[in-house]
Image 1 (cartoon, rainbow, N blue to C red):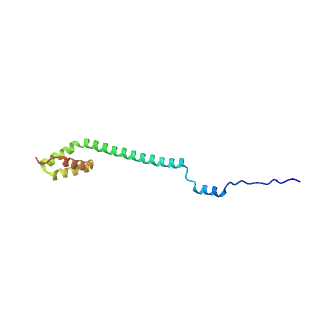
Image 2: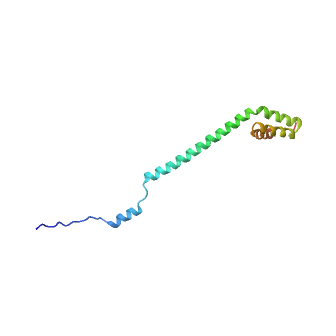
Image 3: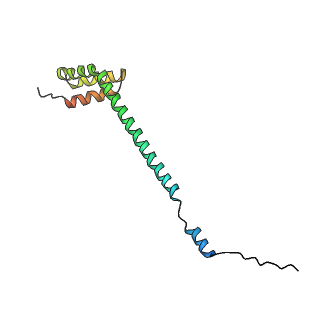
Length: 116
């Protein structure tokens, strides 16, 4: 007769294994990767916004230079003939060329001293 060998299954502590699976935290590598990705995304967005702001400033400076003569003329008209005439002329120019003329004209008037 053949003897049957007894089969022994080894379970060190089955309750502990189940607890480990339930309480096991996220892997640190994955968590750090996700945090780094978020940080990089925020940095990229901030850089993009800064580039856009710089670009808009540069465009405004270019337009100031391009419309410098028109703005000087409007200020001269304001001093000689009054604000109403200059405003009408600025309105016509802004319709023909660019709406920024009104903004630049207003900014320039705010800087000028008309107490002469």
